[in-house]
Each structure stands twice: as C-alpha cells, then as structure tokens.
Image (cartoon, rainbow over the protein chains, first blue to last red):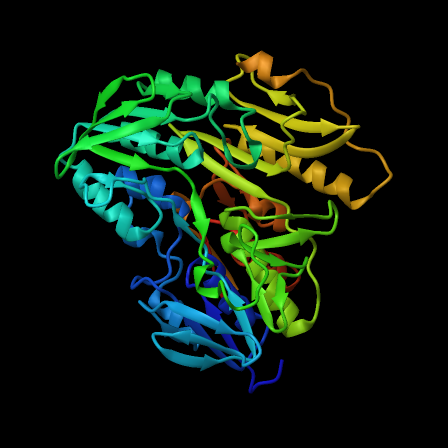
Length: 406
Length: 63
C-alpha cells in the first residue's frame, strides 16, 4: 500500500476500529476514513448485556479507546452517518448522499437486532444491540418490577442474568426446548437452565410468544399454551440480521452475510469482516458467519496486515465467552451437535470443569465452565496438537459431560 | 516499554498468557496477573500481541 492510498472502513464498532488501529500499527501512512452510523465513540458490545446492563459499569466504560488513542490514529471519523450504496466498479461508497472514493474498502457493518413483529409503537419492548438500547433499557428497569426476556440464545441468558442481578422478577422464554450458547450450541443447556432456576428465573422453554398485550405500554405477554405472564418490560433477544441492505444491489454475493474468500475478500478491493462477513474456511471448505467479538478483532487484524504487508493470516478459530451469575463460560473451536462433550478436567462436584468435543481422536473444541486457567491450558494443548498434524493428540481420559453434570 | 493492566475490565479469556506467558498469568478466576511490567526488547512483540488480542482491551502499553 502506498502512502497515497485511501482506505475507507464502513462500520465503526470493534471490527472497523481494529482495522484502523492495525493499519497504523503495521505502518500504513495513507488516509483512513472510518464511517459509523452511531453518534457514540466506538464501543465494545459484550459488556452491554453484562456489566453495563446490571449498572455496575457506566456506558463510557464500554468505550473501545480513549480520545487520545483515537486522535493518534489520524483518521477521518464520520459519525452518525449511514452508508447507503456501494459502486464496486467506480470505487465509491455513498454516505449521506455524498460519494466517497476508496482504493480499498473494508465493510464492517455488523448486524441489526431482529425486532419483535407487531410491537411497533408499544413502549416497554426492547431489543439490545446498541449503547442507546441499553441506556434506554436501564432507565426503564430502574422503575420496573417484572421483566420478560425472550430468546434461548446467549444474549437472552445474559439479559436474564443481568436483570436478575438488578433484583427484578425475570421470566425467560425460549421457543426452542434447549438453551444455546454460541458455537457450543445446546450442549450446556441443562447446566445453564439449572443456573437460571437456582437464581430465581422463571424459565419456560419450548413456547412461542403469541401475543404482546398493552395499550401504549406493554403489560403482559401470552405464551402458545395460553399462559399470560405480566411484564413491565419485555426484552427480545430473538436473533439478528446482517446489515447488508445498503449493498443489496452492489453485485456483492450475499447469503446471510457478505460472502468472502478465506482472507475476507468479497470483490475487487472490497473486504468484509466481523458479524456481517461470511468467510470461507479452507480447512472445512465451509463458509461461516459468527457474531463473536474476538473473531471480529482477528479478522480486522488479518485484513489490515494483508493490506499492508501482503501476508495472509491463519484461519480464525472461534473463541467465545460469556458470564452468567458469576460463572465464566469460555469456548474455543467447534462443537458438532452429534458429538457429546468429554470432561477433561474438573473439581469434585462439577461446579468447575473443562470439557472437549472429540471426534476420531481429534479435539475440535474445548469449553470451560468457571475454570479459566484449565480452559486456557486445554486450549493451548489443542493449538499445539493442531500445529503438528499427523502426530499425537493430547490424551483424553474422561466421561461424557452432559450426563455427569446435567 | 511499560505495561499496565486494568483488572476490573479483565474477562479472563487468557489471550495474554497465550501470547506472552512470561509476562502474564491468570489467577484462579482467570483474572490477569502482570508478571513483568517493563519487558525487555525480546519480550516486547509478545506484549504488543497480548494487548492487541485482549478482548477487554485491559492491557495498555506505553512505548
């Protein structure tokens, strides 16, 4: 990349900001334009449903960088502006009606929360994706008593745990019969369900929400079996949609996200990273999209390094963490639904353990349940084994975690 | 080079120990423990890698 090169990054969350930071760290001296549709300085999303929602953190504590660090990047930051179209051949993006030229474009527009259908105009119904979402939700929770959280994924579980911590009555509703946790899927569902119940959450799995009741403000929801659950606040964590509508007629290949090669290249001089991107995994020949903070970080670093140095980075292995009621859950790798987990380290009683997904003697993934050090050691073993193919894998002696801990 | 860690922000991912085990360790809760705050020249690349891979951005480096 020569010093006159113009790199434009659309999306100013962790993936976009990390791209800019890594470009500078690698010595890129050209111009960087970072465009975000929110008015806040770039912030981290994982704390929003954890410490920011409980009130232990101020919203500012989620900031990704301070003003001095941001200024040192010497970039043009365009905030509160949305990119509306992309011209691949002309090398321009349109932002606020104005065409901005690029030599290389990095798309990091992320995902948008799926909203509950039929609740438009009804106060007290929230989704949680942005800092504005959590600030508004916190304000309402300050006077609320009963919260209904909808969603069997990790976000629903985190919101339920955080609102319980605030002392509210919480019901957690899941359409599926099991709770899911990122790439670990439903392997840990019995344990997470037990955590919720021990902490006083009214957990109801396998139900649809058929109606949201309220005149101007929500007052209750109705489940598919007719049960009415009163609610002062409803939080819907019912999934998300890749923010790709603005490139829908650009010619980019879209399939639940922007389809990319294994380096993030989506079209000539156009890369996509983070939650919006579907990178090809050369190892499995599959293309995957995941909504993980660290994956967004590592893809940003990989693209920035490729642009500056021409060097390709190794495939990003999914790494995910959560915290529920003080229990730290960490997962690295893949966890096929058909492969039961094997315990590889544990404390008596099973309150802390590390388990692995093992197939044909190969460790595909490791997950830690409140055992961060042992998790890290297991992860290091897995990385070491992957780096010397054909040779010995770490020896595993264990039992199926699901039955032991459920 | 001077390293500082913001332990309240730490999420216990262990990325820093993976990147530079001679500079960082974790306590039983996974929280970062800084073993060496002024790394020698050979350790500085590891320190930078640790800071760049920390999901909580809890590691700051002053050159």
